[in-house]
Every structure is written in structure tokens, then in C-alpha cells.
Image 1: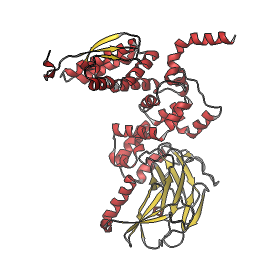
Image 2: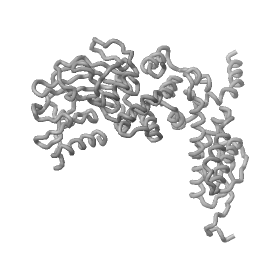
Image 3: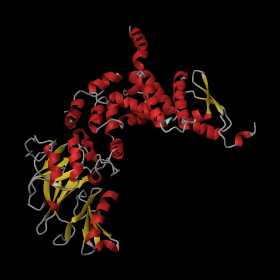
Image 4: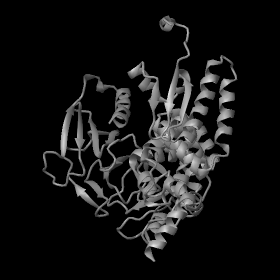
Length: 163
Length: 312
């Protein structure tokens, strides 16, 4: 195959290997939605096997699923693309449990999937929105580590926010 | 026994681990990611509430960089009214009381009594004024007031010739200044803040008065000039290193970076006066900067002043 220099997009396949040894075969156009992989591809060029020791196979799979959807929808010159992407994103994060959300976020961050990080942080923010302090702690199972009195002091200082 | 407890804890971990890992003080989520999350909160109220969740969240949300990003993000996303928001980006944060925001959008004028009264009436149940020398924050007082000076996001508001408050429209808190020793026209009073922790002056994060030092300069045509010092809580006479009598157009004073800048009409110079430098004779207290030739016409004066504030 000597046609690699032609302008038509050749669908090069990359092998991504997760921390638990699971490998994924994905098109370059899909994997390069992730900044980190895009960099690797640009730097190393010929290397087709990419090891990702920080990402578990389960979550890498989900990240790639997201990439695939977005890569596909972007190549479509359909006008309603944004809408489709939005709808799909909504579905994607809708029923995520915190554990998955956490690991996805870490994976997306590690792989520099900026858009996905945006989506996931937005999801977390939506879990915080409209909740009272105690409810947020409850949701994320966080224990207050303020010293006695400290919390009260901050509350007083910003009393306008707690009316 | 101790071992057993440990094991029990370890076994219990898988259920709660992810959740607590997510956000707590020991969480493995990076600060950057947490900030990405916080910056998506709908309003300052929500952010402040979050800051109470744990120490780590508190320190992240309290940092000036975050507040700057937070404000800017909102600023970029929605520009309901331009003239006012250019001056007071935080006004948009009144969105919780959207009625006020809309009214602001109509009136546009900066220092417009109409606008400020709407702002103030929102919070009309005022507490009685403080008589002591120590300043404490209180809800913004209701009634008519006039913005006489502003610095970053803080406004110096006058209710009468003796009654001055510094207020923060974001937090709706204010501090009352003790009555000045002499009466003067409100436009002769200027406010300047020092923000040691906040080097980026675009930040717009001046939320608490108690943490910042500030000076209010009252300059008087004929008699003495006075300087109010936030640490002592008192007015004191100040000898300005130049003769104020009749030389100043008062609109051309620009408080900026903790320094008052005066436009000296006569000598065509910009004079920088640092009210935080305590020694009267310190050479650092006052500098004079030559102006480019353009500064003569009144129109240029006004533009120059704005330029100084924005571009430091």
C-alpha cells in the first residue's frame, strides 16, 4: 500500500491497550479526538500500538464509545449534528453512577479529551447545583474537616449566600 | 482487634471509595478538575455554599484566580446589558433577582440614582449604623444613595454629605465610614483599595472588606485634605505633596492599583500618590509622570481616566 500520501482519508487503525491488558482497535480519526493520543500519533507516527497504563479497559471502552459517536457525527455534514451530539451526550451521562463518573472523568482528563471532560464536569456540577451544603456532602460522601466554629465563621462572613 | 477494624474498613471501602475519592480532602481528583466543576456552578451563591463542604473546596473556591474565572465565564456567556456590565461585571451576578438585572439594563447610567436605589431597595431592611471605629460588614442600606467612587467591584456610596458607605454589590454587604471631619462634595472623595493577594486587577474578586486595606481620600478645595485609613478606622489630615487649591479637576482622579492618579492640568502631568506609604516624606509616596501631549482637551481627559483604570 503506497497510497498513504493521497489526500483521501485512509482509515488507519490504532491499537489501544488499557491497564488491564484489554485492547481496542479504533480508527485513527476516532482515537485522535483524545488530545493525548493525537499527540502520540503525531509524534511517533508509525507506532500503531499505544499503551495506556492509567486507564482501565472498562472505562477506556466508554471513552472510545463517546469518541466514536462524536467522530462519526462530525464527519456527517448534517446540519442537525450539534443537536444529535447534544442528545447523545445527554444520554451518555444520564445514568452514570458516581463511581463510573469518577473513573471516566479521570480517564478523559488523562487522555486530554477536552470535550468529554467538559461534558463530565458539567454533569458533576449539575449534581451539586441547587443543593445545600449538607446535601452536597451527603451526595459525594464528604466529611466536613472544618474545625468547630470555622464553618460558622465562614457562614457568617457570607451570610448573604445562605439566606 | 485493631486489625479486625482495619479489615472491616477495607472491605467496606469499595462501596464508598469512589464517592469520597471524588471530592474529599484526600481525593485523587486534581484541583484543576475540581475547579472545572466549580466554575460551572450557576452563581456565586452556589459557589459559596460549595466552599463550605470541606477545607479543600473552600481553599479552591476562595482563591482569587477561581473567582476571576468564575466571573469572566459568566461575563462571556451572557451580556444582558453592556454599558453597565462593562463597568461592573458583577452586576450580572444579580441574576438571582432577575428583575433587578433587567431594570439595570434599562437605566444603564453609571452612578444613576435610579439604578442604585433599585439596587439598594432590594435590601432595604438595614441595620442601625455602626458608631464604633471598627468597621464591620452589614447589609446594604436601603434608600437613595449616590455612587461617588468605585474601585474594582466596590462602590463608595454617599447618602448625605456625612454619610458614606463602601458597598459590594455582589455580596450586598457594606461598611459605614465614620463621618468625615469636614463636609465636602461627594465628588471630592475617592476610594482606593489595596489587594496584596490579588495581583490580577481584572479579577473583580474584592468580596470581603475585612481582608483588604483601603484608603479613602477626601480632598478639599480650600482647607485640608483628609485620608481615611481602614486599619485605624479614622480620618486623619494628610499633606498632599502638591497644592490642591484650584488646580484640580476632580473628575480626573483615577484610583488604580492602590494608587491615586491625578491629572495636573497646569503642569500637564500625571501625579501618582500612594496612600499606603505612611511616611509623608517618603520619595515613593508621590511620583509625577509626564503626559503625552494630547492631554489638553476635556474630552481627552475623560478618556484618559478610563484608560488608566482599565489598563492599570
